[in-house]
Amino acid sequence: MKVAVICANGKAGKLIVKEAVERGLDVTAVVRGDNATAAKKVLKKDLFDLTDADVKDFDVVIDAFGAWTEDTLPQHSTSLKHLCDILSDTDTRLLIVGGAGSLYVNPEHTVCVSDGPDFPDVFKPLAAAMAKALGELRERKDVRWTYISPAGDFQADGERTGEYILGGEELTLNSRGESIISYADYAIAMVDEAENGDHIQERISVVRK
Image 1 (cartoon, helix red, strand yellow):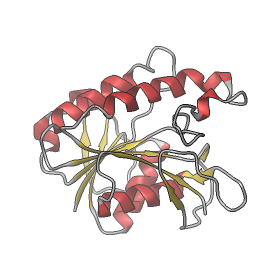
Image 2 (cartoon, rainbow, N blue to C red):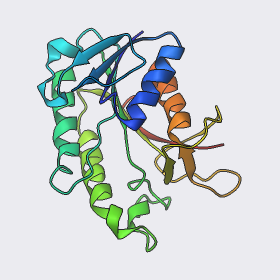
Image 3 (cartoon, rainbow, N blue to C red):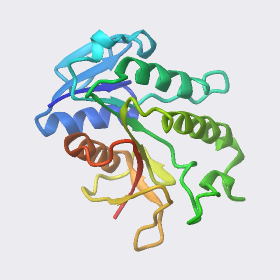
Image 4 (cartoon, helix red, strand yellow):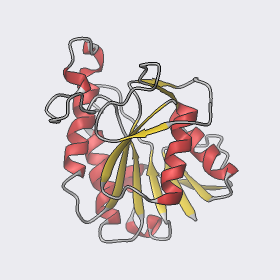
């Protein structure tokens, strides 16, 4: 299986690359600079400069793009649109490292995590930008996408337990009432989906077991 990981030099991207390489997948790291990566193959190119020719030979493209500042937040939408456009009407699957703020907290799917009174104000613009991008993604019937939301507490340096609970559109808690997952365990779930392809045009979520 041929896999491309975009923004492979980020915290999530590096661990996804590592997980995929350790499973024996044919991995290409897509990066802008000379960053260290576990992948033997590297494509040095900005996400927005990628073309359909760059991605046509991959079975799966994993999008680990992130934007955090006020002026770059709209790029959650524009970057995803660009990737969808170059993958339109192909068999290549697009897997996206998503956000938790857009997960629903009621069965009617009318209230999200980011709507809660305890959701930090500082993260609301990011959550809104990622929710907007997800909403636009849902309209793309021409792309074989899967959006994977982490748990509410997404820990960059958390331990790799090797286990996770797979959830859907709603915020899922583990047996201890926690919504938490490490980047390492999230990477396991991402590569599982890359290998299995069980959730085409769906948003799923993961939490530590």
